[in-house]
Length: 362
Picture (cartoon, rainbow, N blue to C red):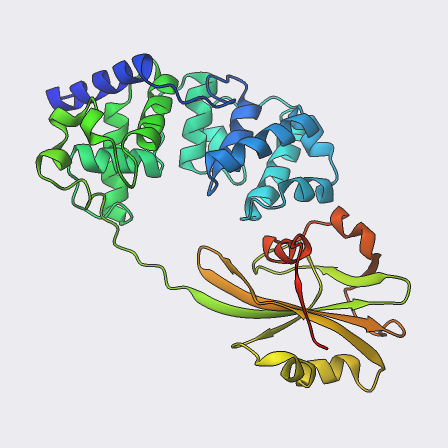
């Protein structure tokens, strides 16, 4: 390791020992189950939000056996609000594998950890280094940003070449004597000092040798080459309620958003539909209701949710039915008061939890 790289590792570890006061319940944890749980929850999730979920999951499922044996609907309900539900599906599958095939003992080699469902290079390196002191460097967004700035890496970090460069550099910088401590240090440093916006360059202990600071490139690094093209979707949900206060819901299937979560009767359109009358006179509504007698109670305001690659817009139409609708395949009738027992996507929960959710039609 050359002098500049050695200095980086030395200064980072010195900062971690002296000035890093970032407290989190999983820091210093050696139980691989708890480390894995925290890492899966924190993927695509802010620490502030993930913290509460981590504690709830540990309370509900203290061991991997508890998680593996739990009804899947209970796990999804507890996950509700975290989004990216593939993480939850993988969490369940991996818990079952560890519980059955490994008898509840988490595999202790990087290669075995990497083979588990939903565990990529970053999560495997985190578990391997934190739980088993194996020399594997973690590379997440915080790490990539710190290295791109300190070494003034001008290649886009989301390109194939950029990712390769960052991974190789991270491996060189890793303190092999204490990989877990080093990995925690660089992640914390990126989160608290070398932040995406308003980094603390004025008090940064790495500032004298930081090439981005020397070249006035802090605000332009790291470089990202890919731009995400977002799809816009319009979802209109019909809440059909029978006389005995039951509502139609179904579990979403297929490889679309919100797989395995529940929803009401859905009409998806290419664009916005102008007003309640147009919604109720649509071909979808005519096929759904025919000449059936019904009472439209209200239509909600427009709700919106931003996903990583999609923007969701939509409304909720509440309708009272005289009799249940025949032939609704895949749907079940549940008591309105029991809706909170089912896991719904954030978009639907935003309506369910809104204290002023509706606009009267009449």
